[in-house]
Length: 273
Ligand code: ADP
Ligand code: MG
Image 1 (cartoon, rainbow, N blue to C red):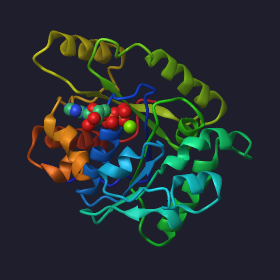
Image 2 (image 1 turned 90 degrees about the vertical axis):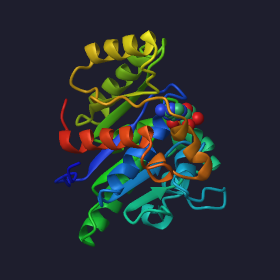
Image 3 (image 1 turned 60 degrees about the vertical axis):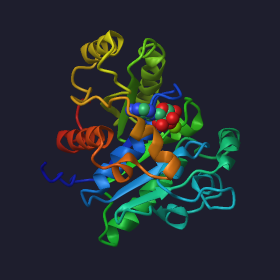
């Protein structure tokens, strides 16, 4: 397959859906890993207190580790908390620790509470650019809620990637997510676009998966990627080895489909605004 193009400016993509278990974290880490394997410089920001993205990327996230919590609450720099992911030369992660669970509340009383990630990220990206190591992609993994952590991610990003699980209730709750994104666009980040929708846990043997996929494609013809991510044991096993499926089982259908999704994202660029 072709070499992925390097974007002309850093693409900042927030992976969001307030439903849990739809494949946000799996998508964030595997897209990031696939891009990094193309020698692109990629930063993952884990902003979910569960720290699942940090785990899958093999990055330490026990409570004594400096993390995204310290960036949001204690004015630490991203450069001070970022870690390079084992198995990768060009993939970095800002880990999340369980401390972050309290941040939703602690943020409320802070100045510029919605912009804290954006400000820290802009400073970090600028410094990397000046050092001649421009970051090509930032991928932010959100918690399953629409609270201040997710708001910070929406404000810091240019693009939203919504993973949608191919099951009966897939479209339920999506209207709430879209309404929230519209509010962010109106009040906090007018440049934010839903650039990408990815169908996850697709099971080609069931009519239901096919029906859901068809509905989602009809609603969002420009945003839905051609490739759907199949349900795959390899994908779900990888995190228990502190790996992405891209490194754990590179020739599996799961790895292939995430590589294809990353390729589509890279070649499409930012659009669909
Ligand atoms: P979220 O971050 O939205 O809560 P996850 O990415 O953690 O969702 O996925 C939820 C669960 O489903 C995890 O156990 C994950 O390993 C599993 N999973 C995700 N995608 C797939 C897939 N394509 N096939 C099989 N299991 C998957
Ligand atoms: Mg998650």
